[in-house]
Length: 361
Image 1 (cartoon, helix red, strand yellow):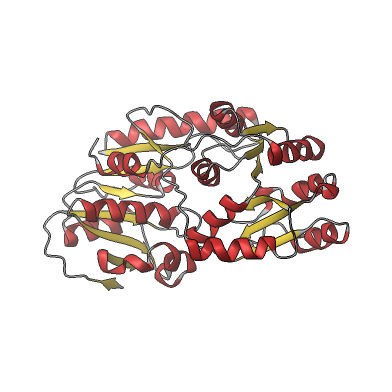
Image 2 (tube, rainbow, N blue to C red):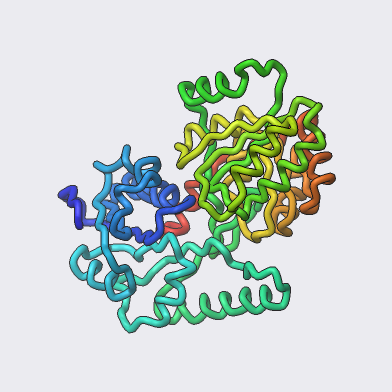
């Protein structure tokens, strides 16, 4: 299924994203905007059904006149090679979900017209076993080096706290901007009948990884302090007892405000700005787009678990704290964040993200 915008431009950029969950289509949007600003015609390649998804509606529906889109039932290197032969891109094809395409680029005999540029979202292993994690990390490094011989370059996504970037690192392009309509609606909902109430916010895809039961247990310990939980994002079903955990916590006095579904950036940014703190409690290593949003908004950050989060907190300094995945420590951190300093706001780095992936730097 192809939608052709009949571009007269001769400079063409192919952007591939076979997944549409999470931040993937937000990255596509940043690249589409950067291409258009340079007078380049973007062609976006996705899996069949993507254009009917909520994520597509949120991130790309207001830009449909700016790019061509192709949907395919099967996406592999042979498919991409055939698309390139027809579309004739003038630049290296960008693969937003580079972790998958890294192996595919080595496995397939098909070659890319101008090489490829992969966005690696998880450069380190994710196993809970430290030995396995090291092996996974070393294997990915070896694959990235091997892929260079096929003209495929890998760029590792890094968090917003990193001050300088290596030649093959790109900063998370997450951003925070206030939409007055969304901000008014969010503020009205959070302040209704709750004068002086403060909120800890958990945002993004709500699943087992977010440790919501642990955060609710922590908030039980400070429920008399006027602190509640904003839970914003789509339930992915991995936290099987999520509804029961929320119901039980509410019965014990914790206030929970649920913003369900795939939320627009405007709503997410409004919630981040209205929250007393943003809570990230997980063991997954790697950059966090939600942490980036909180940092750009100047909202206090409470992090727990992952070593990468600990490093981010250390780099941020005032306005951010880290603790282990423990309900008592987490409750103290959340309470302190409500009255503590705010982090210094950082500038959005989407320009460097696009420049690196498009080969301009």
